Length: 269
Image (cartoon, rainbow, N blue to C red; front, side, top):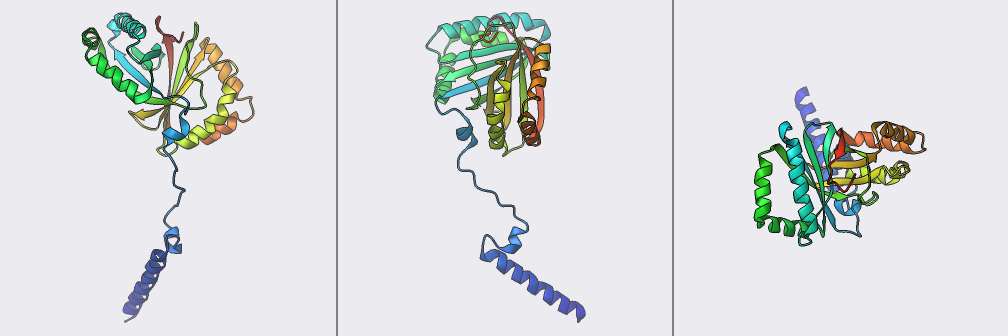
């Protein structure tokens, strides 16, 4: 009898809890278990990218057979030069590098499509009909171990990457963010980037649209590894830089750094 009365009381309490929680989205019982957040008003790609341009970027990572690296660079430079000279193709190479420290025997290419996705589609259709380019792809394939690419947008608060004279080394710092944190990342870096402009080291900042998502690439230029160390250390002496690091580190799942050397044909030297 005692167990029966206890069961009846428990059933009645659960009934009341359900009624209270279902009566309103702000029911006290539901609020114990549901974390409410404000709805996002727009996609982060619209909130963080540049409104005044319609640039789309593609980054390519090519892992090359070690014995083929020199031949690969020569072949790639020849094709890039032809695409630049032919204005019928709405694309331009921003920079080409070989990885020095990081993943070895790797080439990294950054392309810009002025006109966004329509320009990319137009370029790809024309290349598929270009017999010379198809022969180049077949020849290049013999030199590769693997390849992958991503489509990127540039952050509105970063510089647009423009050709620069060298010699420089380049660092690409890649951050793999937790899903849902891109806007907070952008808000923090929009304030922090001013601390990294004194030596013109900031080249470009991008985030992925297609490929692995919630990935950020920051591209920096330095005269040398020693210059890199001095420039990065000087940022810590500026008020506000430590705050940016404190709030952005929890947004990151993992990160990596590549030190890259520009190829002879790269506009970024």
